[in-house]
Image 1 (cartoon, rainbow, N blue to C red):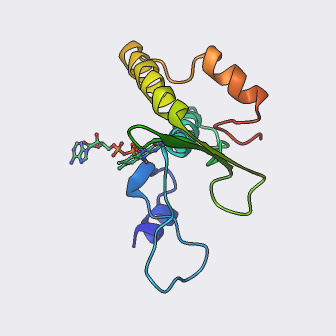
Image 2 (image 1 turned 90 degrees about the vertical axis):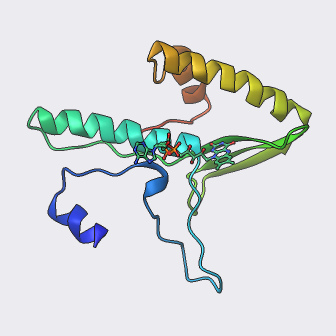
Length: 141
Ligand SMILES: Cc1cc2nc3c(=O)[nH]c(=O)nc-3n(C[C@H](O)[C@H](O)[C@H](O)COP(=O)(O)OP(=O)(O)OC[C@H]3O[C@@H](n4cnc5c(N)ncnc54)[C@H](O)[C@@H]3O)c2cc1C
């Protein structure tokens, strides 16, 4: 039903954990494709740009990369990973673990909350270093 509604009303968007991404293939136990923060920021950025284009009478042209860049905090340790794109086939897969992830997550949380309070989405000092590493929210059109 959701898909038919989306197909019928192409200007209705849905983002984040509320959408169900179909799994790659059937599994013995039902599974869903995981969603992480950066992947959702990618969806939201594409959606915001597309809504603007539609309001201006243009065709929506933006697509999210669905890259996954994640700091998973385990308390006294953690895992950092990068998967581009999150859903295979992937071009980049990297992961690392250690106490540094825990501290990096604390630092990121403070940075993120400051961004939210200031109403910033992706300031240049965040976008530029990520771009140098090839990590972008939007697909090149
Ligand atoms: C324990 C845990 C650890 C995670 N760790 C990581 C991580 O390290 N890195 C990473 O990238 N991702 C992580 N994730 C995943 C990431 O947090 C989620 O994918 C992301 O927050 C989802 O964003 P969202 O905006 O779609 O939904 P949410 O962040 O869940 O936002 C939805 C919002 O809608 C509000 N809401 C719900 N119903 C209503 C309603 N009826 N009316 C008004 N408001 C409503 C909720 O209160 C909530 O604020 C983690 C998730 C969990 C659960």
